[in-house]
Length: 329
Image (cartoon, rainbow, N blue to C red; front, side):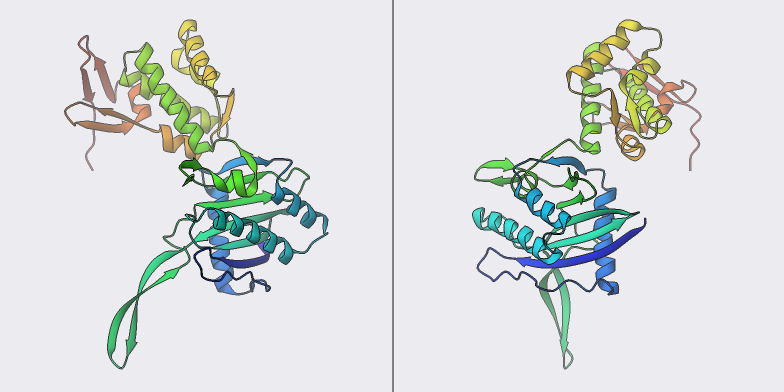
């Protein structure tokens, strides 16, 4: 990945009585330490299947600030300070939001200019302290890196007037309500479901469909899963629900129509950009779980071929699973 860090700055935000430090000096991006840390988090943001696409609302203060930066009316440092002050105001309003560092990075990726905003929560780490052969354990706070998970971050495209956003976040309970404050209150944008969320939604709809129209037949569930993976692999990550229906239900026009109608009514679009990795992660494996605690997990495509797995559903609702030609490892 041809990522180039052009500018970066780090602000320390506290709302717990300790002083905040809004940096007046950019990070040394030529430092190996800075480059390694920044690139790790930016690459994770770009590659995260939980990333959601979003667009700024016209009244967004962040959109206004970035518009001035984009036009050259304000410099990078002043832009980052304005973003940090906005986040700090939210932390002061909602005391439950913990202290953090705010990393702001201007990057170029294959010629495209973007601004990354990464909210770095603190994690506790243990270390040793040694003085005159007196070895003691100490505890301190550190920024997330190898094992730390960044829960709030966004990448904003600076190449056009709309400045589309890709973001990750989670909802926080603020004043008794679950609020996705990073998108709604900080960025002030409208976000669409992530690839991961869309795949999970389709999986839930498939399970409901099979339960209603096929008496919860595990073989039908596996066939739909297998068709979804195959469609994503053949169409560069895009999934056409019509194609999936045609593959699973062949010449049965009524079943095809019912399946497509069920998913359409639940808000699934004609061509869903799930991505191959997300499709495989969500649909490649089928599971059969009995009420006695027995669980069988197998590649979904194997259920399509009865030479590998034969699944029989009986009139009383029980299921017989015959696994054939299994080579032990």
